[in-house]
Length: 241
Ligand SMILES: *Cc1c(COP(=O)(O)O)cnc(C)c1O
Image (cartoon, rainbow, N blue to C red; front, side):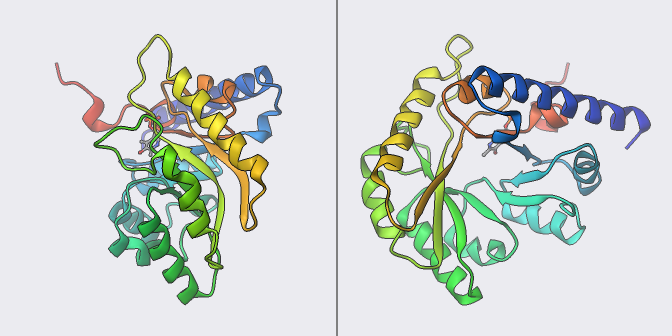
């Protein structure tokens, strides 16, 4: 990394933290109530380490292979590592024992595979249930109507600890910034919270990315996953002239 790239990264992280803090205060929360997850896909170990030096405390990866490569290079040293991407059951074994939280448990089947692997390791794996709040055909995540059944099945597994919900709403339109979906998520979250299920702690509501995290925080998110605003545009986002 050049000196300039380093400076820009530090500057962007300071700006994102400032924006998160302001959104938290507007929502009647303290800045430290909101967990900032740096979505570090496509950023190499050096850049991830620099982000951690600049104050990033949680990294989120969304591809298993990429996570393993960077893990070997000690990219995440000094930070908490979480998994936020689509996960196939046959890759679960590579994650359990390495990540503190798997955010993207979008099916009972996947939850059961994680439970099995965690039991082998003798640990209790923290997970979030991913909700397909937009009810999109092509998207992973549990249908909101099936969420309570899914919770009932998965909370019975002693090697799983459900810590909250995660959502990736449909691509935000510039106008509403997904306000409607975020509000629906908060409603679902509060419904489950009030039910006070055993073996379920609704600690985290993970929603909001670069384009809409302030709206998400206003709607009750206390975990945001931010990539572009921290690391800059990813290579495939840069449109060549
Ligand atoms: C990449 C990614 C993000 C962050 O996206 P940006 O728009 O770059 O902030 C958040 N969540 C998941 C699951 C991601 O893969």
